[in-house]
Picture: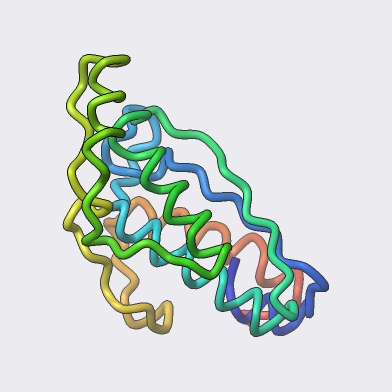
Length: 154
C-alpha cells in the first residue's frame, strides 16, 4: 500500500493485512523486519485510512511463527492503534501474562512491547531504497508491477 495509489484510487475503506511473518525471527520469510517497524507500518496505515478513507479501516491479522515473542506483541500494537489507544513500545508486559506463557510453552516471554530495533523515519521511497535489502526488493517489484497499471511511474 502506498500513498500515491491511495490518492489516485480514493478508496471508501482501507483494508490492510498485518501478518507477523515479516519479523526477523520468522524462520520462513527472511524479511528481517523488526517489531517496531511493524508497529510503524500499523501507525502509517491508520493515518492513511484517516487521510484517504475517512478513517474507515479494516486491519487484518495474519501469519507468524514466533508465537511467543512476536505475534502477541504485534497484534496487541495493531489492536491498540486501531482502537485509538496505542501501546507504547517501551511498555512493560504484565508479569502474569509472562507466567502463563512460560507455563504453557516453557519459553520466556518478552519483557517489553519493543524489540529495540527502531525503524528509520518514514520518507520518500527514493530516500531510503537499499537494493540489497529483501524488503526493498519486494517493494520495488510490487511498484513495478502495480504502478504502471494506474498510470504512475511513467
